[in-house]
Image (cartoon, rainbow, N blue to C red):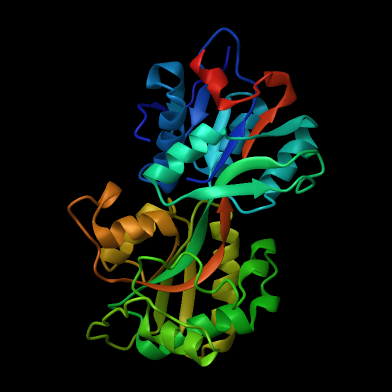
Length: 331
């Protein structure tokens, strides 16, 4: 019998780990922390496959805790937002020896593209040692956004500059995507911070985004960067970013904190309890437009600063589970 975790009702972003669904009970699915983008994408995936909530039990777990559950058998499916390749998936393979990536069907991808900002993405064969074939899935962009009430024009410029000109000092694997070529990925539909706009235009980029209006910003020296859970990508990558900012920005200190990721970070910026946040571009668009999780409550003080890395939905099952597709959960 599997040990109980904190079961919750589903209120359902971007990587799925599946392992060992038991044959005699509903699969246990970790859908991400409360009010997270992970929960929103989880529901999108379930809708795309017509998987009703009666088909699974849900758990609101951070990715680190959820992956522990996958490894010890308490959680059958864990959903999280990760970069490519994911060290967590590599660790799962190292510990289990039977990890397998699953593809999304063309019909599911068509549904998701029609109902969200996520787009088709191919994970090339060989992205992981155990992966022999291309895997079809979807992707979004992780971006850095700033609070227009606390990040002034010059600081916005410096943050954008340091992200790119000192990216080689960032030891996280996903920092390889912090290039000028990628700098504006995920910015569609978002106002850009005027400082970031100035930097990118100086580098020869064309910036068509509306420019965010800054508030009456008072000088400050302490800044908070919202990331994600310690078991995911945001927290360690955000820590590397904050370290670089602290190294080069005299008189200013940046602290990265563990959060529920995208939606929590956006809400905290709205409430002026956070200065900078890492987020998937799709919920950031929703926040600006006042739709989805932000229906009727658009956030007016958030501005795009830069692209960080592409986030890929990766569906991983263990060979022992006999799972070949999410459609298996509809049986």
